[in-house]
Amino acid sequence: HAEHYHQEMGKLIENSAIQQTYLFGDEFLLSQTLSEIKESSVQYCSDKENISDEILAHINSKKPIMVLVKGSRANKMETIVEALRTCC
Image 1 (cartoon, rainbow, N blue to C red):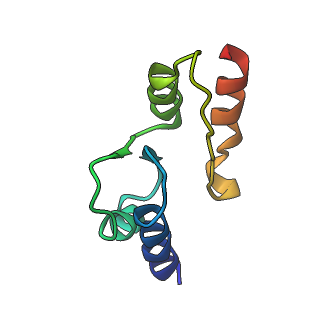
Image 2 (image 1 turned 120 degrees about the vertical axis):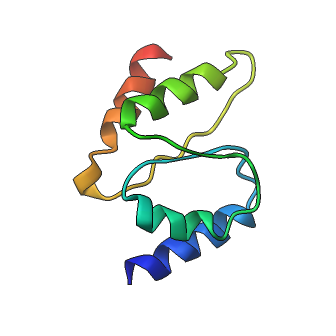
Image 3 (image 1 turned 180 degrees about the vertical axis):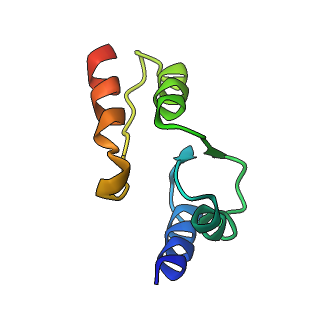
């Protein structure tokens, strides 16, 4: 089931107005997500700190942005949210 849902997530990203996507986690499952995305606005990060750093590098304080952090509880993605909260 996980492979199917990762493919569906890729389709949703591809057909959305999302400008930048950062992926973290199991490389095989994420390859299912990436197989559905044709845009070059997707980046795989080897650890969560890299995701926070990449997002922070693209933040322009004059232009508001929306960030969606999605992941399984096992990945403890709240650490990304906390990193963004402390800086902005």
